Length: 315
Image 1 (spheres, rainbow, N blue to C red):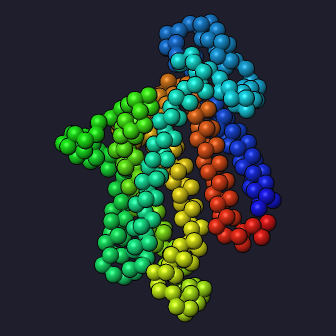
Image 2 (image 1 turned 180 degrees about the vertical axis):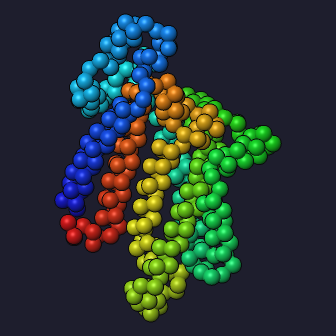
Image 3 (image 1 turned 135 degrees about the vertical axis):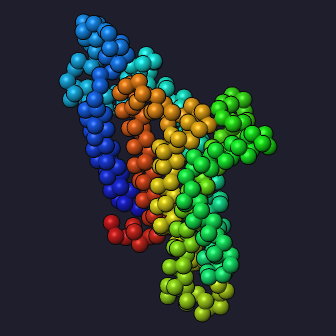
C-alpha cells in the first residue's frame, strides 16, 4: 500500500508542476494589460509604466513564474492588482463559502443517489426501476441554474422558508450558515445525484451477473443479502470515480450557482478577477482549484486500493 501511495503521490507532484506552467502561460498570453485596464484608456504611458513596475509586470515571464510558484510554496500568492490586498487572504475568505457548499452538495447528492441506485438495481425492469431512471433522466437533462431559480421561486419567494440569496456567515452560527447554503447545495446536488444514481445502478447490475454473485446465491443468500454483502463493495470503483469528479466539479464549477444566489465564493471571485484583469488572483484561484481536483483524484486512487486489494498487488 505504501509503494502504491508513493507512486500516486509522485504523479500528483508532476501533474501540479505541469498544471502551474499551463495556467501561468495561458493566462499571461491573454490579451489586455492589467495596468492599462486599471488606469483607463486616457492614462499617460509613463504612469502605466510606473504601475507596471509597481505590480512587477515589467519583469520577464519566467522570472514572474518562478516568483509566483515560490511564493505559493510558502503560502504567499502575491498581492491583488485591484484590491491591493493579499490574494491568500481573499482565497481563504472565499474558501469558507465554496468548500462547505461543495461538501454539503456532495453529501446531499450521495444521500439521494445511493438509495435510488440500489433501489433501481434491485428492481430491474420493474415499475420502481423505470420511475427512478425517468427521474434521473430529468435530473441529467435540466441544468442546475434552472433548478436554482425554481427553488428560489418556490421556497424563498412563495413559502419564505429560505432567503433568496446571500450568505449569513459562520459567525451567526452553524445552523444559520447551513440554512443559507441549503438552496444552493440542493441546486448543485440534484443533477449530480441523477448521474451518480445511474452509475450506481449500472455498476450493481454488472456485478449481479458475476460468478461470485451466483455462488453467493447458491450458498443460500437472498438476492438482497448478496447485493448488500458482496455486490455493493465491488460496485464502488466506478462510483468512487464519479464522486471524486463530482466534488471537483462542485468546488470549481459552481460559478453560475454562486452568481444566482449572490454567494461570496471562489467562483464569484474568479469572475470578478477576470472582469478586472486581476491576473494574479485568476492564476492563484485556478491553481488552488486545480490542486483540489488533482488531490481529490489522488485520494480516489487510494480509495480504489482500499476497496479493491487487487490494485495494490499490481504495483
